[in-house]
Image 1 (cartoon, rainbow, N blue to C red):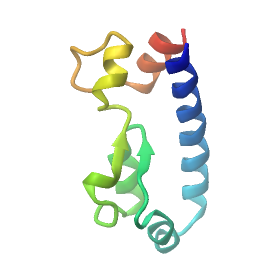
Image 2: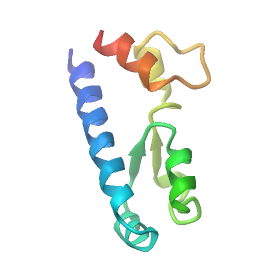
Image 3: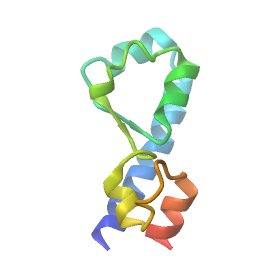
Image 4: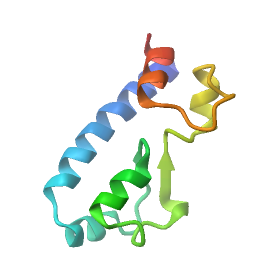
Length: 93
């Protein structure tokens, strides 16, 4: 149950984060993200569209599509990546 609550909170934050980041310019996003851990699903797509791949180092990214612990919790550990739909369906029901 706790994992479902955590995933639900992460999904809500990701939705808010993507909405907020889409409103800001790349310069503002770079400033906001500097020194922060950036969490998202298929994060490389968002960073690519925003032109920020070079500004967020790989060590500061947490991509839920590639997170083994989430895939394992959802019973999808055999997949190299998991879709947000598959994770949400398996964990939240």
